[in-house]
Length: 156
Ligand SMILES: [Cu+2]
Image (cartoon, rainbow, N blue to C red; front, side, top):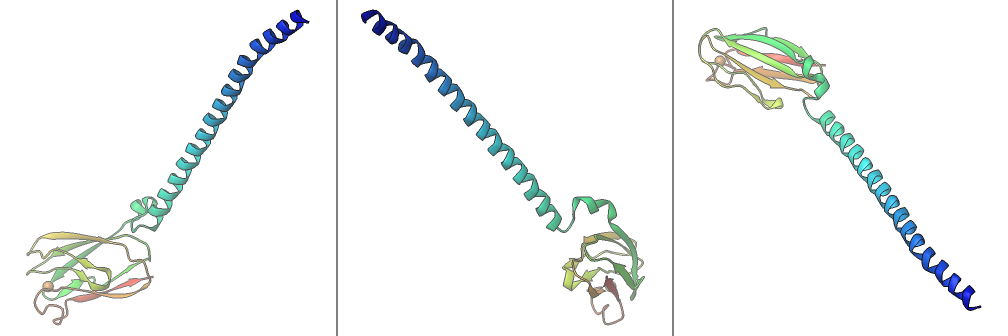
């Protein structure tokens, strides 16, 4: 009886540490696994959020190569051409060259305002109309707008 008890004690004594080690290892693996899953989920979520925010911004990454460049000449008192077209969501780059006098290029509704430039100078404005419509662009210097220095942007 005493020997059996001693064996049982030995067995318990030798088994219990192994079980504890095994449980600790299993828990450790489980925690590590959960942590990796959480990290993976967070990374994916972050990537999706970034893509969504990019898509809602004015200049989507995929559209940077689709910038529509429009050369416009301005003088006393005209824009040439005086009608330009763009698609909603399309980024437009106006390259505005001054053929004489002091002029600028303005579209109130789209918050477009170039710098005022002198004879022979060129300036650029970049914008992305988001909604279809017809917008007037004009020169805000003096009475140039009233003198006919204006045009139409048609967003389709
Ligand atoms: Cu002008």
